[in-house]
View 1 (cartoon, rainbow, N blue to C red):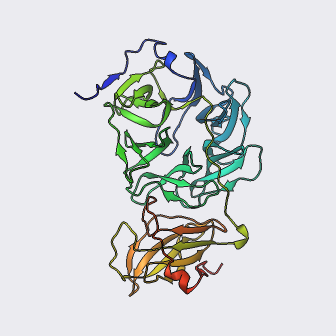
View 2: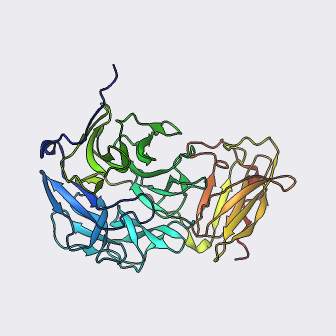
View 3: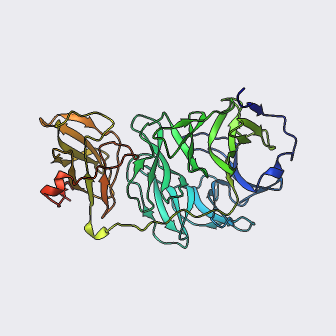
Length: 427
C-alpha cells in the first residue's frame, strides 16, 4: 500500500499546528492572478510567530514579495506607499519599526531578493517589460542585468550564487532561467521546456521546486528534465517555503474557483493540512524567518573597456536537433532596433568541427540562426539572449543544454584566428 494521501481543508482547529512552525511571513491579498498585475487590489504582508499574526508594514497601502536577510533580522519586500502609486522596494526589521524605501523609481519595482555584500536584486518595469537590476542597499546607481523583451521576475538566489528568474519562452508561457549577478551567461535552467514554469524556489537538497500549471514540479541536479511530484489532489501555487527536510509551506486550494490557503505539505507522506487563518481572500508567498547561509560569491570577469561581448561556440552540431555532418555553413545574428524591429548584425563562417567565434554588441537582445552551405536556414532561435560589455562567453553547442560538457579539443576556429569576427552592426 502506497503513502496515505490526506487533504484536510476545513478541519483544523485554531492554533493546533503552530507549535511545529518557526516564524514566517506571507502575502494576504483580496485577489491574485498569476500574470500581469498580480495583486489588482489590496495585498499585505503578515508575520506569524507563536500563533500570533501581525501586519509587517501597516503604514503602506500594499505589500508583497517578502525575502528574509541572511541573518534573519530584516525583511525585504515590494510595497506601495499609496493607492495608484508604483511598487517600490522596501526594507523593515523583523522586530518591527518603520519601513525604509530602498528604491524611488517612477516605475514599478517588484520581487526583491537579498544578495551578498549588502546588495539586492529585483525586477523593474521598462517599456519592453520587467528587467532585472542589482542595487547596493546603501544606495547608488542600479546595474541592469537582462536585455531581452518580455517580463523577467526574480524567483530565488541559488546557493551557487546564480539568480533564478522566470521569463517568457518563445513557444509560449514562461520558463525558468539563470544568470550571474553581473548579468553574464543567461541560460535556461533546463532545455525540456514545460508549458508554463514559474515561481521557482531552491530547497535544502538543491532541487528547484516550481509551479507548472496548477501543480508543483521539480528539477534535480542529477536529471536534465523535470520530475513530477506526487501530491494530494489540489490546486497549488508557488513559491514553496521549506521549514524542515521534506516539510513545506505551500499555497493551495481545493479547486480552481477557490481562494488559496496556506498549508503544511509532507512531501513523502503526500499529506496536505490547511493552516488556521482567514477563509476569505488569498494567502500565498510564504517565507520562513530564520538565519540562513549566504549564497556563494563570484567575482565578475567583465571588462567594460572592451565595449562588446565575445562569443565562442565550440561545436554547433552539439544540439537538441541532429544536423548531418558538414551541413552547417554559417551562423547569422540579429538584434532588435529601437522601434522593436529585427536588425541584421551579420553572419560568420562555421568551421568543419562546428566552431565559430564572434563579437556582438553589448546589452542588446541577440538571436542567431544556423545556415547550410547554400545560405538556407537550418534552424532559427526564436528567443533572445544578451551579452554584457566585456563578457567572454563559451557555449558547448547550439541549444545543447546546460548539463552538457565540452569535448577536450581546441576548436578549429581558434587554430585559424584568435580574433573574433565583428558582428556589431557598424557600432
